[in-house]
Length: 278
Image (cartoon, rainbow, N blue to C red):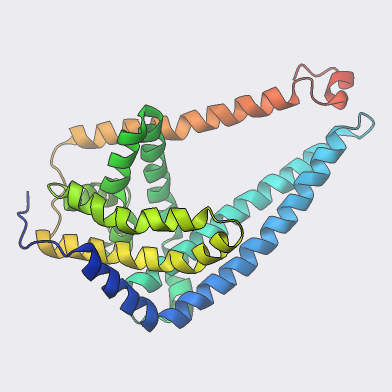
């Protein structure tokens, strides 16, 4: 295991460093935010219209089943497009956060090239966090701090898949409490601002890049203080993490299917009169 080379920077030092970086990169950051807000907002409106129309049709027994299937398919496709677009825009923003001079166009191109790898790391990360939270708040927080820097590692070090998460865990090892304290220093105010009606949501959109910049500085500080990340040897850690991630990915899918079946069961006159069991 790599030894710590120097003491980590304080939250205050990282705060001012992130703020200076935000001021220098404000234009490309705001450009991505505005483009992303417009695209995601438009997709969300169209998706809501199709979903609402589909829901309205389902309560009428005289509607042909093919229309409901068509609208459901369109709504599902729009949800998928929205998710992919959101992930792409988030990747573009992270590239601008990590690279001081990428240019907006270049950031979009690089974001597209990394999209599949980012989706894979996001899936593993989400599975781990979901399982952790299902086990309790403390395991969820433990995992969140361990694996928070996986996306930065993917884009800067080109470590893909589980390697990115293991590298993040290696950077944090031996410095968990300090990392937790520094992240909490910005996470907590960000969450408190976010719960303010309307204004909080608006502020959060523009504060989110600062949060990403702060986390990037924490990642770089951990990387410098440790002198590099050594991936834990042996398959045991990987097998354990894959199992935890699989549980977190499978259980929500099962819950979603169950919820859809419960919603359809007896809730629509069309399904009852058509003789469908659910």
